[in-house]
Image (cartoon, rainbow, N blue to C red; front, side, top):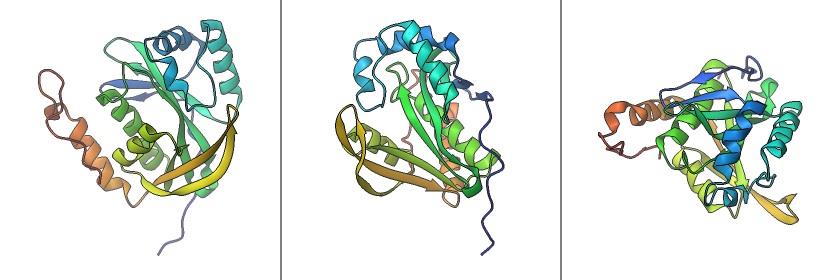
Length: 217
C-alpha cells in the first residue's frame, strides 16, 4: 500500500459550475435571495438543526455572511441557474489539507431546492471538487443525531455511518449528540459514476421527474 498524501490545498474561493446549479463564494449580494427563501412558508423551520437562527432581516443576514467569511469555514451560495437566484448554502468545514480530510456542513437547502436534483448536483459538485480536483481522501457529513432527514440524506448520498459522539455540542441550549458519516476516496469512483448517471438529462422525463432512483447503496 502506498503512503497517503496530503491534499493539494484548502478549497479556494472559486465558482463550481453544474448543469442545474452554480456554487459561488457567498457574498452580501446573496443575502436578499437567501432571506426570501428562509421566509417562505416552512423555510424558517429548516434552521432548527443549524447553529444559527433564521435571519430576521436582510441586514442581519448580511452581517452573518460577513462573520462567516471572516471565519475558518468557506461558505458557498447555491444558485439555481434557471432563475439566477440563490436558493441555499453550504460550506467547507473541518478543512485539514495535511490529512486530506474535509467536511461539507452548514447545509441550508431552501424549499425551492430541497429534495430536488438541484440539491443532489450541489452536493455532487462539492464532492467531485474535494476528491478529483483537490485530492482529499476523506469527505465528512455530520448532524444532530435527532435530525432524521439529515441522516437519511447522508445515506442517500452514499456516506457510511461511523457512529455517534455523545454530548458532543451544546446548541441553542440543548445537548447535541452528533452522528458522523464519511465517504473515502476508494468509494468515490463508483459513487461519482452513479451521480453522473442519475444527473444526466436522459434520466428525467419532460416534467422533470426522475426515471430511476439514485442507487448509491
